[in-house]
Image (cartoon, rainbow, N blue to C red; front, top):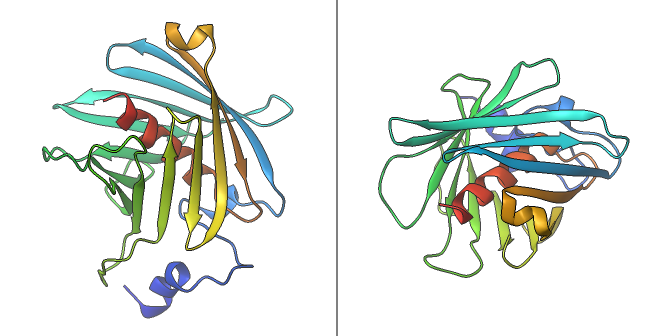
Length: 201
């Protein structure tokens, strides 16, 4: 992998596009998204992602294969965007990998940064041959606290709020996401799915 490719992720200036899944999911203004989730079976949840005008932008489906959770995000045309796969290693640090489309090309890994915390923070490490201890992004908060923030360094790049309703007890939940300008909203939605799956493990 070239040095330039690594720099695409590691050395992004604050005014540059933050893209992990793809630049088609980055827009030059703050995006407000509504995510509706419903449980379809014991191991299968479905997520619909809408913009403020009600247009569907993304859908996430999945279940369990060989004792491993798998969630596939698709665009409105039904084409795979990313696949989220939970690693099978048994650990209190639940770990997921985000793959491009339905391939095995890893974009990043996501793992719980603390043990049995009430706030289930996540560390996100972009795929790179140059491994180091520092994470590229961090997710703080939890669904139980009704608030989640995604940070790159000291900067907040997205926020999620979760409101409990009567439908929450029936397996139907709603989330509101605010994604700041030039931030990959498909990446942010994928992180929400992961933290939700972890909280409901």
